[in-house]
Length: 123
Image 1 (spheres, rainbow, N blue to C red):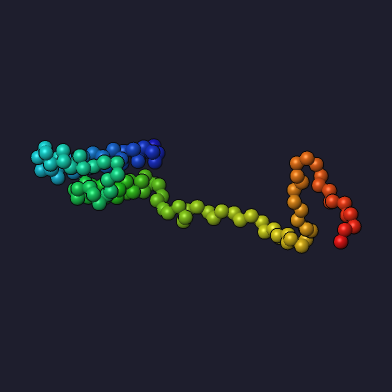
Image 2 (cartoon, helix red, strand yellow):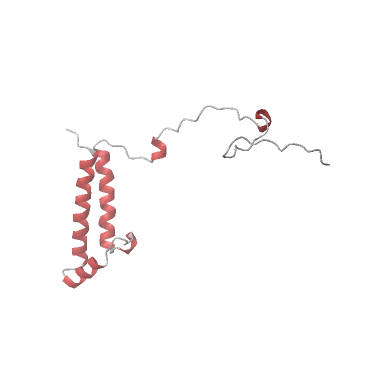
């Protein structure tokens, strides 16, 4: 039975975390203070380049393993723009020019229709 992508990614992430922990332990060379220092330096905003080199190598290997595992189980890895069909374009409609619609009028004011002032013949 084929495994779902969710199951594969779950297994890959679990393996990546374990590999990173083992890499941290190996990088400390059995010194507990070095291990604690390396662990304390990792936080939510730690960039990849800020990780110890052993952890960087373990993460890189885990990423390669993840893509290999997904491809081995029949999943296709590709850029979204190469897989998605282009969005359909709306039908071309002609734009009505201002001259075809007549003059623009201001919206009516509250309180009724606006009437022109009566001409009292002053000029």
